[in-house]
Image (cartoon, rainbow, N blue to C red):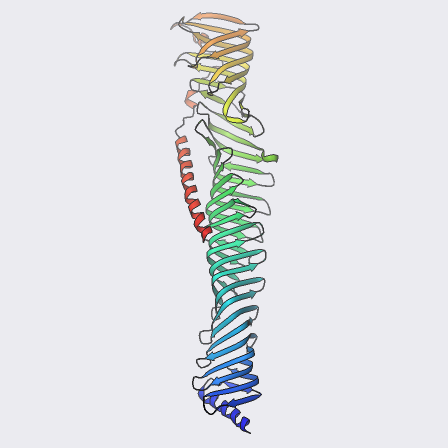
Amino acid sequence: MKYCFLFFFFILFLNQAHSDNIQLFHADLIQKNDHNDFIFLIGNVHFKYKKYHLFCDQAIYHKKNNRLYGSGNVQLQSEKNKIISKKIYIEDNFSHFKLSGGVILSIERIKLIADTINYDLRKKLLKAVNNVVFLFKKLKLTTNMLEYDLNRNKIFYKKNSIIYYDDYTIHSKEGFFSPNEEKAELKDGIKLVSKNYTVHAEVLEYFFKQNKINFNRSAVIRQNDKSDNFIYVKKALFLIQKKIFLLEKYISIHYNEKIIKGKYLFFDQKKKYGFIRNFLLEDLKKKYFLMGGYGKFDFNNDSLILKENPKIVRISKKNSFLIYSDILKINLKKNSAYSIQAFSVKSFFLNESIQGRCSVLNYESSNDYIQFDGDPIFWFQNYQITGKSIHIFFLEKNEYFLKSINIKNASYIEKINSKEFNQVEGDIMIGFFNEKNILEKIFVQGNINSIIFLYPKKLINKSSCGILSLYLDREKKIRDISCVEQAYSELIPISEKTPNKFLFLPKFSWKEKEKPNGYKNIFVYKEIKKYRKENHLEQEEIKKIIKK
């Protein structure tokens, strides 16, 4: 009878104390100490407050402070939502809940585990502290501090968080997750680890439903098995399911001793093709650059096509090598071999002493020569060489030094002054270079015609033969000439009245006005200098990102 009276007294007290109508549905035993304000409830305790039901093994209610302590198999339920724990503490007119000891919260598709959860009923704000695990569909988040705003249905987390999703592990110092949008936004010290690569970033957005990742600020993507291979980018979008990648603003790819830079890159991994804007490639091993305003690459054919003023550049202390064209096509082959084709070559500069132009240029890395086709023209200071096809040979295993030049349907012209030119024409012409890349010997074979000015005798040696040899001195002038096999020669005196037919061969054409100048090379050097500076700044930025 005493316990029954206490039960009704307790219910009456709760109803009087709170207009929100806190109800005690059940307790096996209720005890009250007359000397203090504590009421003890033991066994299958069941409270109801608004839409919330609280179950526990025992509870203590402090009448004066209006607080409730519960322990043992604690369950707080509301419709489909449920929290279980070992202990619960309720204060502030039943508007603040603190649950501790193996706390597990279940809200529809969400499961939250923590050592302690604080819940503000008025603000609908939940805080989880220590050993926090958040589960949503395939996503798992671990952290030490998490806030769940139930009004906005957004989750904020701090203190070295880790997200596990599919094959990815994502570390960050803080971020938020929206279950409605299925979107996570991470910042500060981000490290995304997958099977093949690791990403360090400042800011990351992950749209799980669309399987899309945004990097809105700088990021570094490293190859796991080779850390020297990495990508640095200032903005990127990864469509993971579609396997489409967009890199924007500033792209720097470091791969197998090659550096590729650009301002926009699109890559479709399924179709194995893509394109890049403001393309620049540096081969650190072979010491050359490829440049172009637009590049299209296709891994099905292992090809790269460059347009919009593409260039091949090699700059060294010893020699330089530059090619300007309308189109550059590079094909990769087995064993790191490759081929280069340049179409409509506007100008080229070989070892600073040779310049020219042609319609088509071909180079195979396995060969020791470059082939020039389509009416190629070469200028060696005051020399001009033309032909149907020209091959430049390099010394074996040393592309800095020229070995020889081979010309079909050749024409050799040496300018003496504005009116006088040494001229040689023949089917095949072979020239040899010395160790300073200076042409010193020329051999011509087949249908040879020549006009050589002899000084100081003021004579012209006009001849034809089957084989002709020319030897040049240090000043690049003819010092010796030999003409054999069906040789015919005549000496013609030079005067102001000498007819042009004696001064020029029938096919003579001096094209000095078409000779490219090196002025625009200055812009190439400036571009490379800018690239070097960007590389230095990039390395400093990468150190900061990875350090975080």
